[in-house]
Image 1 (cartoon, rainbow, N blue to C red):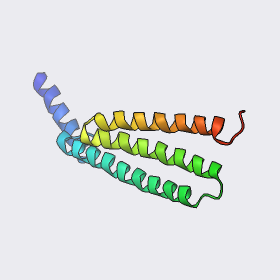
Image 2: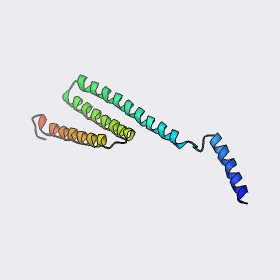
Image 3: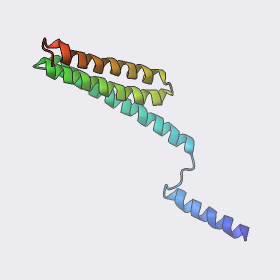
Image 4: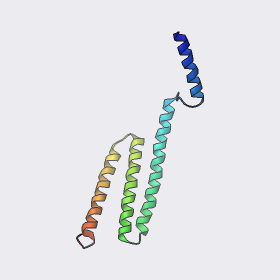
Length: 118
């Protein structure tokens, strides 16, 4: 009876691998996943540069401040993707520190930078 169950399972596994439902090579999938994290990081780095261009060409200081916050947020997301790709948490820790300082600077600027106390 065990031979029948084993043979039936092998038949089902063959059908599923033929249709791509069961992964028979998990190492290849891990490589694809790592490459996907790197591609996501590259896309986010490109979006960071686009946001930095808005910082340079912003018509008013408030617009530039919003663009700086957006670029730092996108750069932090890219750092998360890179830290997963590299398997290193140092990049993630540094991005958290930088984003905290950026938002603290935003609060200070909005509170005291304009010359009026809200």
